[in-house]
Length: 510
Image: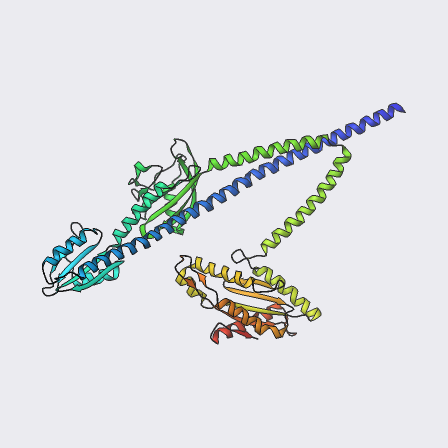
């Protein structure tokens, strides 16, 4: 009997050891797969972050160009006004010495061109432009230039008509020189840098572009580029870049290039965008092997945790392992419920305005309509959109339109009850659902929203002013003849358009 007990105990121990070993192996394999998946997700996340960084940097560079254009134009405008003041107060404008005086004044501002015409003979008596591009300017030429050039001033003093102007090409060259110096001074981590190629021929081919700015290879600036150039892997990066900006104005792409201040060649991800006024392709890239190094470091830390966990699991008794499996099962179910809830909440939100999206709005309306049919408890439903929203997009661009939608949603979210639901129905059209709101309160509530929106001052993205908006509202409640919630939506939509027909910036109760 004792020998049977010993054999039984030995069998139990062996069974537990085998069970523990099997679980350890299973967990080891599973965790190894998780670690591999984690590494892949970490790499993808870091690449996505880098792409956002590249795109933001390029867009900020374009904004810097446009800011410099505005500053340079304003500077030359002041210079022209200063010259005009000097010439306008000349003591004897009838004297031919006026021409010599004008020449002296203009020498202090070589970028400013001048054409001075004798009013009596109509002959040009002074012209500052010489050499290539210089010409005898007719009156028609000067009138055309007055419309075309960004800085132009025309006035009469004594016997002379004076025309002062700065060519757009002069302003552009100043800005280009400033941008070259600025980009050369840029300092980025991880061997990243920004460069500029100028397209000469959009059809591509040999010498289709000029390398204008390249802080990594300054000695090659001015070099002609061809779309048949390849990298070490045989890719055609210049062709890919040209086709991408011609098609979409911008693109992300990868190719192989050597690192800054090094002969090491590695793959890099690049964002390029076309700045059409200069035919500039402004691009920035970062090498991917740096990202792989970060992912490897994260994976090493993860692998250390995995080994420790496997040793712990192998040492646990069969009973504790069973309990652990039960607890793990419960924990996984709880985590899944929490994660699923978080994903669902995020899926219900409109990514632009943070209001509920249309799918969530339809679920809410369906639920409230069912409640109305069963209990009679009603809701106030407001449908509204922004008056003349298309003009905002046409005048300021869709990025500004998106900013207006965000500002409107944020402002209204602070004016409604916690039980109310603001939903983006589509485009600039919103739905505001107010469960259990008394019918007597609807008119005052709508007036409050109209006043709040009409009082908004939404700054423009270029910080040069602000935008005022209004909305038109249609208000309804469920009625017994409604066959579904969409009947109420349609009535609200018709009421909203009656508000527009009545002059906009008002609410109509259906």
